[in-house]
Amino acid sequence: MPKALKVIKRDKYLILLLLPAILYYALFHYVPMYGLVIAFKKFSIANGIMGSEWVGFHWFAQFFESYYFFRLLKNTILLSLYSILIEFPIPIVFALLLNEYKDGLFKRTIQTVTYMPHFLSVVIVVGIMVNFLHPVDGVINTLIESFGYKSIDFFNDPSWFRTLYIGSSVWQNFGFSSIIYLAAISAIDPQLYEAARMDGANRWQQMWSVTLPGILPVIMILLILRVGNLLDVGFEKIILMYNPSTYEVADVISTYVYRRGILGSQYSFGAAVGLFNAIINFVLLIAMNRISKKLTQNSLW
Image (cartoon, rainbow, N blue to C red; front, top):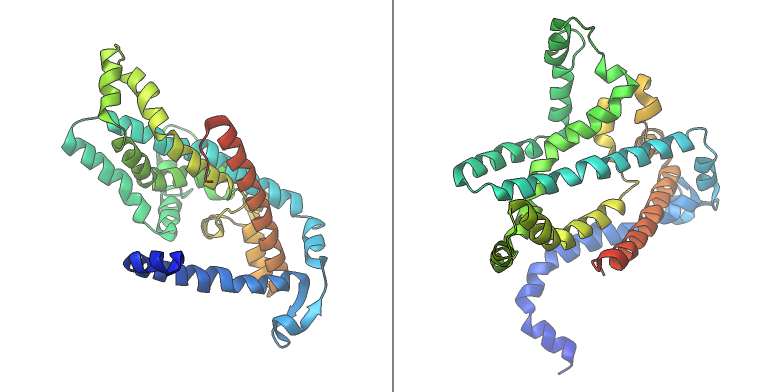
């Protein structure tokens, strides 16, 4: 019997468990990739994908030559970089601090409270922000005015958009994101801590010399994946938050494609920009993986 058949026979139940996931990715991620060809065509629903006129790199050139191209690219990269620099480290710090606290009841309470915002929809989160930050009767502006200052129209002031976007993301996700780091910390061999204590290491030194190196592989893998999605800034939250007065700092590639590609029915243009995003993200993923492998010996492959 061929080796492949032996493996299938031996692991048939595991393969059955994997089958739904394989089918999902095959049907909804790989099969639709054939539609990327419309990025090089003037797609017409009447003519279909293969019957539409071939225009080569017309849509790519149109996007690169667009008046908004550099603004969109700048806003997208800045939001992603701020997210990596601010939002990414906070769950790590939170997990390290929570791990140092040994009171089971208090620890579980803190975990529950910080996990809960993750299960709120983006619409609810933005709705809470709108109510709290309302320039007339919002709680925050009421407090500001009580100290003798003028109220701030947060949602119409471009200088506040990125702060609100990143801050609300941190509040909503840092608790839930810390779960994977807490799991990684729990897998560290307790004998390493015992050896560190015997060498005279205090709690801070144990955290720095044992805990952080123990979770470094997880940190680097998640960082590689995060950098690999640098140009993928979700448009749902931005669309709920922005308005024409904040387009200057809030408009990103995905929102522009949504307005022009989906609402404007320019599907070929949307596919071209999506392909551009995918290629850039793929290059960043490869580059970050190599850098991580060289500097920390941790990588995805």
